[in-house]
Length: 173
Ligand code: GDP
Ligand code: MG
Image 1: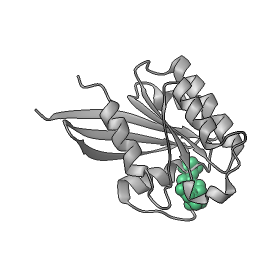
Image 2 (image 1 turned 45 degrees about the horizontal axis):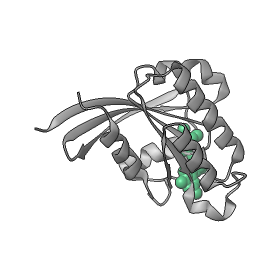
Image 3 (image 1 turned 60 degrees about the vertical axis):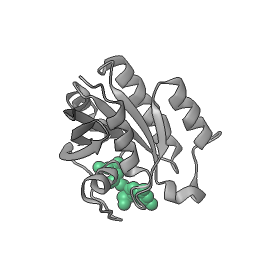
Image 4 (image 1 turned 90 degrees about the vertical axis):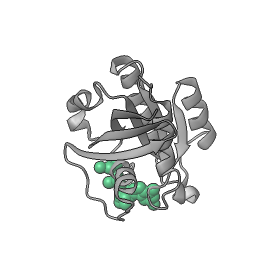
């Protein structure tokens, strides 16, 4: 039978990494070059059909600013899934993404499905994540039980796919 699953999902990551743009792409199929920065957090919902289930994502798009850090647990507590976003042209955003992963591993729901999104994949020429870049992120994700995709909210590359992969991995109750 077809199951209906409600899944709270939180997006975390540095301001400017593209969290809101990924959500806007997924929910509305749109992209804007000058996306306004998020104040506090914004809520969206979107439904996705996978083979055996219909998943209704309840999406919390957080601001990412350090001054809102103390609010973050409100959004990831009880979340079934998280997308940790960094900008592939910004090493600091990758370092920050790893901090979010550590925080979720320590404080989040132990069964949380976690995805790492290396966003702005359309800007490959600007790749600045040091060391191996793509490979470094792949290894990091594997070692930490996340799945990893490079995404582009601008071109839509891998945006539906990352939500689809999460939907497939959610526990079927
Ligand atoms: P947030 O602070 O993490 O929510 O990031 P935003 O979604 O506000 O995006 C920050 C800036 O990066 C905006 O100017 C977006 O247009 C731009 N941006 C977001 N995603 C992409 C992408 O995939 N490719 C490119 N080239 N720019 C992007
Ligand atoms: Mg935002």
